[in-house]
Amino acid sequence: MASRSKTRVAPATLDADRDTLLAIQDLRDYLPRNAAFSADTLATLESTLTSAEKDELRTRIAHEASRDRAIAAAQAFHEATLGAKAEVIAQYGANSDAVQAIGLKRKSDRRRPLRRSSSSGN
Image (spheres, rainbow, N blue to C red):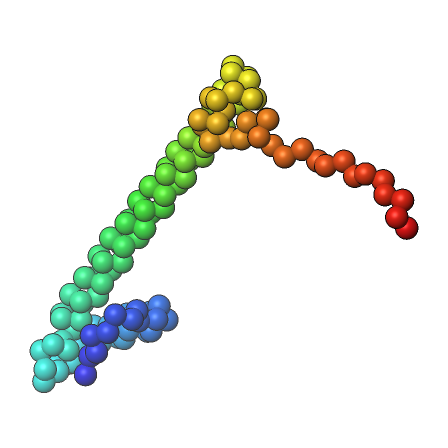
């Protein structure tokens, strides 16, 4: 009968199931032997499904809004940190210990390009 797997039922299948429910509700003499398949039971299950889908949508919207706020906060923090690094360089100089303390290389620690000597060994 019904499987209890964690996979979703395809939306097209659910649409067809909802159409089936409407058709069953229109059958005035429908009287199943198993009460689990009655029109009232099916309508209750469909109502539960609709409610769960609405809750899922609300949760998804809240999650997306929360993610957007976190992204905006991270961007603002990063931009402010870059500005603070520039301020440290401007205030203390590019060769100061403060520049090294904030995780940047001092200007004197940067590798200078080597001069190429002309060799006449050709």
